[in-house]
Amino acid sequence: MSGFTARAAGYTEADYQSLSTQRAKAAANFLLSIGARKASQMTVRGMGAGSPIGDNSNEEGRKKNRRVEITILEN
Image 1 (cartoon, one colour):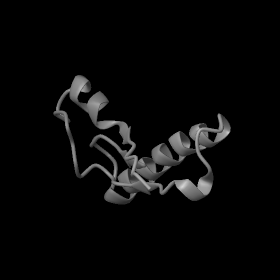
Image 2: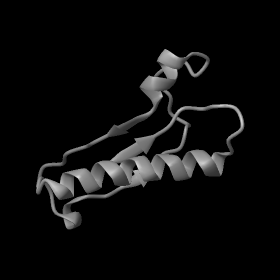
Image 3: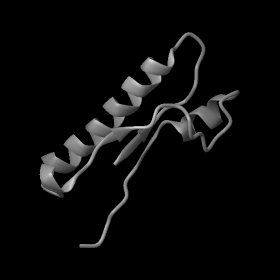
Image 4: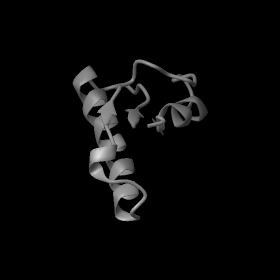
């Protein structure tokens, strides 16, 4: 589970990293709370603001960049 965030004025790379990690942890905690997965089945990581899928110069693009991507691997 990888968390991402949008770039915004006034924040540092450390801020982006922390926020993206918190975002991924929140998604993981939700999946744990509903019993969808066990903690041992998940890996959580923050990716910062380095992989945008939207344009950070407008709110619509920033919304796209505030995301969690979940990768499911076969066993």
